Length: 387
Image 1 (cartoon, rainbow, N blue to C red):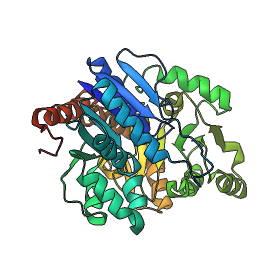
Image 2: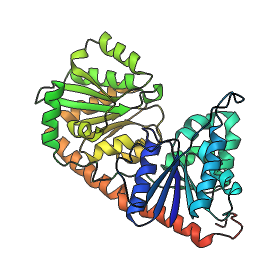
Image 3: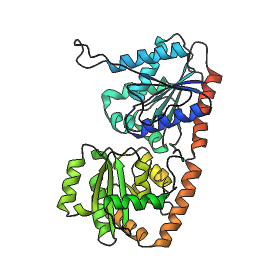
Image 4: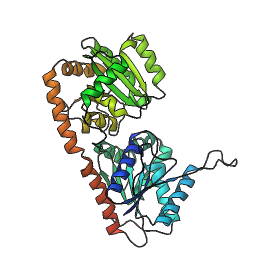
């Protein structure tokens, strides 16, 4: 099978999943073509059967803004024709699904199938912009198959966008060879020494793009309340527009010596393994891929009720879920967890078993592979939707 994939290449859940999916499809013998503005950051090595095609956007003076969407559509069409792609997988309804639909119309191969995956921002944020709703609906309804990464996101899409097409939930997954509990104690010891964290102190962690929607200030407050009862440190990995206010809050609470800002890290798995608990208290969150990665590495999660977080965490079995903004309850759960070694070990064990069962990479990659195969089996000669 020849598969085209378009995603955002920068750090973020959608790009991670799109890239990991492409890698696994290539390992299964399929030919994979990434069509994007740059090489996806998770493509760290050369892989057999994987090809990358960069979209170069010309900044003509006649345009107020560079015509990325048109250029991308033209590039996708070119790759469809040149390599005779069977399926193109668009990650995000806008602009990528719309670009894929236009590309198919432009191409000579009208029966190329289009799969679109909704990752969250295209619905939870852009879906509230009435000027974009028609474009999002067009992208969903004119794709052959549309998936979303959580049932919560599926429901929100029906509510906000009201598409006529079926949306199938296919959860995110983690490559266990990248994220696992291997060498956890050794890595934890080395990073504690590097960050000057005492050997017996507990470590809480959060990583994201530090936008307002991530509620990182609630994470600081949760840590502050927890630290009154538990000897612990907080590690932030990543960077973003909310970082200045977070640093200011840390300073105002007088906890600079116990909050560590690690910045962007290429090997985030080591920081997951450093952590005893992972915090994700977002106001909106379609799934929470970073949290799932941390869970695979052994960090027990505390998350908010936002979006798909509560689909990943089984409350009081594999972690804890609190209402958005309730940092005091989050701290209470952490104090309970981190002060009882037996409880922690039992919950960690249940968590590891659960994520490996429900978010198993091979099973979820097979789900996508079956969707592609279904499209090929039902494709019409004129390229119209047949399922």
